[in-house]
Figure 1 (spheres, rainbow, N blue to C red):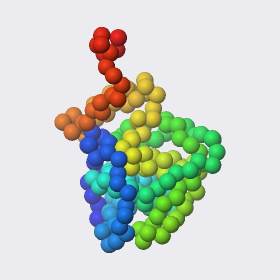
Figure 2 (cartoon, helix red, strand yellow):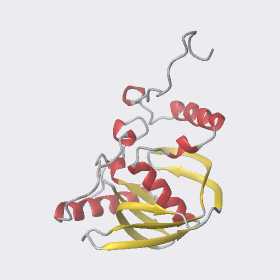
Figure 3 (tube, rainbow, N blue to C red):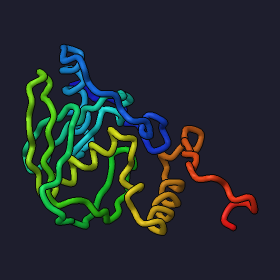
Amino acid sequence: MTVQPIRYYGDPVLRSPADLVTTFDKELRGLVKDLTDTMQKAGGVGLAAPQIGVGLRVFSFDVDDVVGHLINPELHFPDEEEQDGDEGCLSLPGVYYDTKRRMNVIAKGFNESGDPIQIVGTGLMSRCIQHETDHLDGVIFIDRLEKNLRKQAIREIRKAEWYDPERTVVKVSPHAASPFGIGR
């Protein structure tokens, strides 16, 4: 077993877009094993490489007894149907909020050998694929919450035992600041 430490909210690697995998080798197969072992040990349904400090577009999943991984995922949505349900994250232990996601997804990518694969997901599998792909883009599920819920989640995170404000990265707004001060 190759369980790795999971990075928590605030670690800069969780906010950085991951790089495409270009080499399908023994090292990549080791990463897939690390992700799968770590995810299963932690009791999660998915784990993305940035969550163990690796900036590559790879994630593992374990949903309804289907265990696998996806490399360089591209998501397509066959319809507009949505789901709204409880979502959590191994990088935000104990934090759960209802989060809107698409009900159905078609994910295309590669396996650890570089062979093309496609996963058709609905319900929890769709939620997992979208959540883990967000991690590869530097997005955390609380970013998808409405403003008031996101503020509530951040307050909850700041009170969490695992939270370390020293490693928190605050994103700078791309919008110009008001000449009269913030919020005016």
